Length: 141
Ligand code: ADP
Ligand code: MG
Image 1 (tube, rainbow, N blue to C red):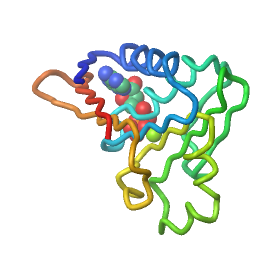
Image 2 (cartoon, protein in one colour):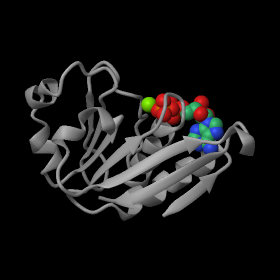
Image 3 (cartoon, rainbow, N blue to C red):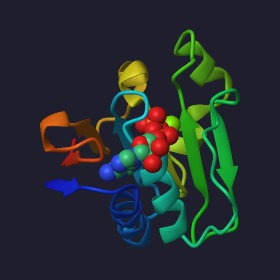
């Protein structure tokens, strides 16, 4: 499925829908360049799960956990990860295969440890269509 957005608010709203429909144990991967809108979409997902606290990028912690929504929400940002072993150290299996919702920004970096099935979300710019245009592709892997 491909969705086109023209403002950050539209991307947030798409995230909110995804969060509202998310089922226990679901894993979302987010792929796209720096500043493309991965965190904006993530903030929408959190809102859709009923989380009201602010969501920032957990760049220096790899994972941020939120327990106040409809389901536990595990927000990963693996941009600065040196080696997938760091994922082993934080016990990623407990998150990916638990009953909460996991979302991984920059998931392509840890592709080798992703499970067999997940929902892949790719965000791309197309400057010919405007600075704030984003093409968002959602695929079941
Ligand atoms: P990432 O997490 O991918 O590095 P962020 O979500 O932190 O990116 O930042 C995306 C930036 O792009 C924000 O400043 C946001 O306001 C801006 N932006 C402009 N247009 C859009 C859009 N259509 N969707 C999402 N973000 C957008
Ligand atoms: Mg981000």
